[in-house]
Amino acid sequence: MKKKIAFLLMGTVLCFNACTRKTNIPEAQLLNTGAAEAVAPYFTRDNEGNAVLCWTEKDSKNSLFRLKYARYNVQASRFDQAITVPASAGCSNAAESMAKVAFKADGTVLAIFGKRFPNEKNPYAGAIYYSLSTDKGNNWSEARFIHTDTAHTYGRGFFDVTTLKDGELGAVWLDGRFGKNIKGSALFFARTAQGKGFETDTCIDKGTCECCRTDIFSDGAGNIHLAYRNISFPAELSDQQVRDMAYKSSADNGKTFSAAKTISADNWQLNGCPHSGPSLAVSKGLVHAVWFTAGGGAGLYHTSSAGLGADFQRRNLITASGRHPQLIALEGDKLAMVCEEALIAEPEKPMEMNHSHGGMKMNHTAAGHAKILVNILTAGIPEKAIDVTDGAAADNHAVLTPLKDGLLIAWVREGKSGSKIYYTRVALTK
Image 1 (cartoon, one colour):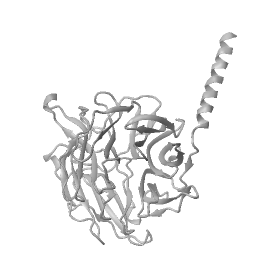
Image 2 (spheres, helix red, strand yellow; image 1 turned 30 degrees about the horizontal axis):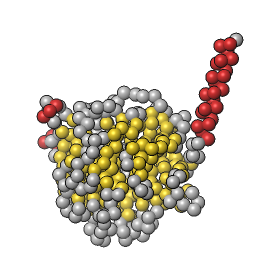
Image 3 (cartoon, rainbow, N blue to C red; image 1 turned 90 degrees about the horizontal axis):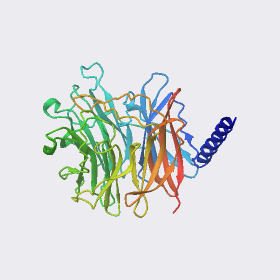
Image 4 (spheres, rainbow, N blue to C red; image 1 turned 180 degrees about the vertical axis):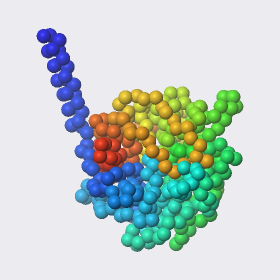
């Protein structure tokens, strides 16, 4: 009898604690797309500074994925009507290589997306395309290659794009055009011209991890920052393969880039791809980076450097159970990092693959239950953790962007009826 009473009391306490936690969870809203499946969220800003959410949506009529985007209406606390990019039909829906849009300063909208080449020997063979709209998304150009090499025998993907100081756009991606001549993929950069699309591309590094997302952005001073996972063979490790994060910068709108600098010598010896890229932010002249590694202890880490050319400081652990981080700068010296936190720790299972190189579409296994968590960092040190979801669902690949009164967060929730995108606002107290 005593055991039964104790059991009931313990259950009551657990229920009370769970209910108490849930009262602090912000209300999540379903992105009402009406589609069978919606995945791969990504935040950007239009030329007027409005938050814009991009995602990839499956059409129930023909099962093709298409890129869509919508502006966030702050007053109504919801997204405006979605705009579809017609040329994106059949695009990739990979979480680390998501389709997205970007805005030139003159209002031109550029959509960028990847597609596989059908009926090729290499199942990962594909290309990266872009489409332009000069009338706020009402009409779009035909799809064009972003890269000058259009061979159908290898893969390209894991791209990112940013608005440059001069109002044009700069993009980076992983490219397999060098085939078996190098280990891994190559990193390429291209920029748009006034009134036009992308110009000639340039290889800015070779030997990159094939399937981790890249990150590029231009800061307030016009400097370009980019990060990616590199492949190296350190002599001190007897030339064992290592996959750690690298950083490059440009102070001349992408005409030249600095030599690659290691963000952190984690020495993660890995013959495969973890499908987890880095995220950068600049605050008060410091370049901040967060990333996942299992080198020297699995988890999400942070470091910073004093600006262009400076070395990165020794890393600090943010969370040992977090995955897929996204970082933004807040006012002062604060940062906000969103990630998913697995409720049950699982061993890392990197994908062994040879895409020759930069594969287009990866179908991940279904995610386990995880909660979306925001960490507020002060000078790179975790100060406060905010639960965004309670871990009752399979939530993953969260993204965030700042609002005047807090944060806007979106993520993928997997369920029996397919993957959906949810979003919420999180208030930040000063």
